[in-house]
Length: 167
View (cartoon, rainbow, N blue to C red):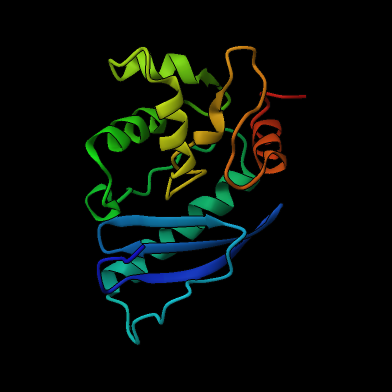
């Protein structure tokens, strides 16, 4: 994936491993779980706006892992993500799922007005470029079982336990 230039990015150490966090002046463009950095060369000098956004994102990620019930306020740069209209609707709806709550893939499909699209919703969530902030980990199977987390079910399990959903 290419990002609008100039972006800022760095590695953040989460309790379960590294995250690559990248921002544009408009907000978050990437949170890659398990990633240590981009495979392409970064710009020599990121814009001050992207750097400020990156500092804010890192502060909020620290707060999320250290403070109960933290709500993210750092913006997502939706325009920079290059999403199809369907994926954008899915991710914007997932973005609204509150801390400590879960919904099913089917409920999310109904919320976007496409009740028969639970599997397509799952595919859209699997390609989430900003996990944790867009909390796709809060979407579970109808049975409540954990399914399909691109970073691995152990990370989804960790995040839901961290939020008090699982004990």
